[in-house]
Length: 321
Image (tube, rainbow, N blue to C red):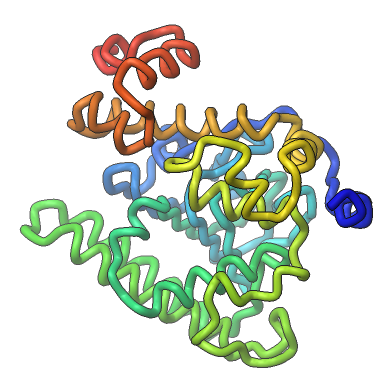
C-alpha cells in the first residue's frame, strides 16, 4: 500500500487552494438572479461581460452538476487549477465539487449556465441517466467538449426549454415538466459526447459502461475521492469508508485531501453537510428530525450539536432567522 501511495504522490498533488468556499445553487442565485426551482435546478444568463458572478472571482466548490454554454465573446475559467478558454464552440461540464474560478471575460461575453443539484438528478428515473453520469465522471480530466454551430443551437434551445418549464410554476405537474426538459438536455449532450471518438479514450465508448468498470488507472486518487465524496457524503461521514473504497489507508486519503484543498477530509465532509443542512432549513418545510435523518445523523441531538458547532445557532434558531 505504501509503495502505491509513494508512486502516485508526485502526480496527484495540485497547488493548495485553501481560500475556498462551498456554494449551492441558491448561493449562486443570490447574486445572479437566475431562473430557479427550489435550489435544485437553475438557469443563469448574463447579458454583458463580467456580470456573471460565481464566487466573486474566488475559487469555490459548486455543489451541483454545472454546464456552461457560451453565447458570444470569450472568458477564462480555472477548473481544478487548470485554465480553460470559454468560447462558443465549447460546452463545459463541471462536476459537483470541481474547484471552480471564474477569472475573466470579454466585454461582449454572454453565456448560459445550467446548474443541477445531485438531489434533483436522483429523482429522474431513466436508464440513460447512468450513461450520462459516466460521461460526467470521464469529463473530470477534460471538462470541455467541442461543439458545432448546429449543436450549439440544439443545446441552447434545450437549456432555454428548461428555463421555460421552471417558469411555469402554476402547472400541476411542474416538477415533471422540468425533469422532462432536463432529460432532453442530457440526451442531446450525450449524443454530442458519444460521437466524439477522441474525447477521452480514442474510441466510441459503449453505453453499457458503468462507474464500476471505468478504468480507474486513468484517474488520480484525488479525482476518485472527489467523485466518492460527491456521491456518498450524506450517508457516509467516516474517512474509513473512502479509504476502503479507494484501496488506501486512512492516513493517505486524508493527506491527499489536505494537500489538494487545504482542508482535512473530515472538515470537507462536514462543510458539505452544513451546506445541505442550511439549505434544507431555509428552503424546505422538512422537520429538523427529517433533515437529521436525510443527512444520516444518528439522532436529533447529534445533528443539533453538529449544526450549533458549525453555525453558532441551533437548527431551530437558524430556521427562525
